[in-house]
Picture 1 (cartoon, rainbow, N blue to C red):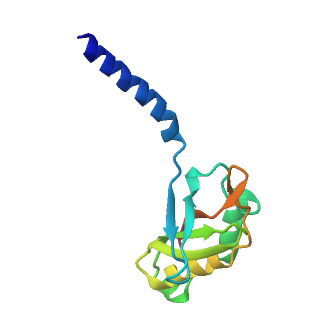
Picture 2: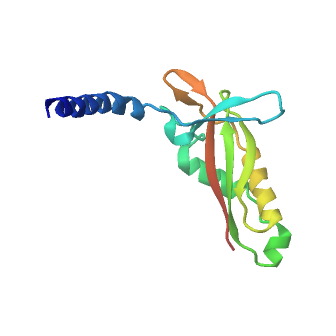
Amino acid sequence: MLKQLRLVLLAVMTLAAVLPMAAQVRHVTTVNPLSKQSYMEVYEFDYVDIQPQFPGGERGLINFINKTREYPYHAYKKRIQGRVLCSFIVGVDGKVNDVRVIRGSGDDSLNREAIRVIEKMPKWSVGKVGNHAVPVRVVLPINFRL
């Protein structure tokens, strides 16, 4: 009985020591943005100490999208609407790269326009882990509504 109690106590102490470390785990993936030889680690948006930010914050981002987005003529004529879910990486220099469509709208012209808008973005403030700038993946929906 005493031996079982010691084992349970040891397990609880081990778990108590491991849990704080689990809170510090970062979600990091590797991507190959340009070639098959170069890979880089990319941090997920919610798992960095300081998240990258568009100049002007969220309001500035919405204004930029609304000013830059041009409804494709083909989609406008056919009254096609939708949301394009895109991901991109804010590099350590603040530039946007590796723009991808995660979930398209069903219309290629809307998907291409969403990519065009994101590629025209100015430099973001960089994401940081500790005091080090790191590349961060951002997921952003672009809406097309008539």
